[in-house]
Image (cartoon, rainbow, N blue to C red):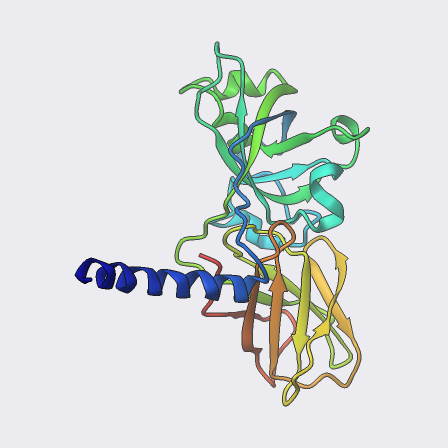
Length: 264
């Protein structure tokens, strides 16, 4: 009997955690990280030791020039860009030539699209910052690897990690009480966004936002009344998170509002 009591004390909290996970996420949790490597090609752009993108097609703007994005950014072909819904996803990329490549993979965050050239015709291609590309090489061989131009690589999806950061919502320039546009920043885990909803003050109704371009979403209506709660659902695994009253009643265009939440 004593052993059964100990087992029950152990199982009850475990079952509660599992139940809460299922309710919060609408089903069993799936992991975005993939242990399988897939073939692709890679090039680099910008200055040899540079950060790569200056803004980029995802709309992250100056964020790409500062940590944790700095020197870890990359542009991808349309098959991974997914019309902007692939923005924010994280990948490990590793080159294959043992004569010059390290066994270490570089982790990159998708902030841009490369629509033509090497990235066309359905190819899976990464166009990395010069710094990220060089890090795939053995010590001292970054310049030599960059001199090769296009190279063969393998890649896999990985979990995004932003230590010390919580999810933030940037109100895009031009937003009004009738057209509100948001950009999600520092999303741990999947990194991508599949849908967004907004709830106005004194309302129980979640209104679906429309995907504009890159990582930008908007809602048209009005007058829209804050404070606003925001719910985002990831594209890859369908995880959901709601930030209550995150955007205040007296919100301002170009302001960023940081939540107390993240997926990890």
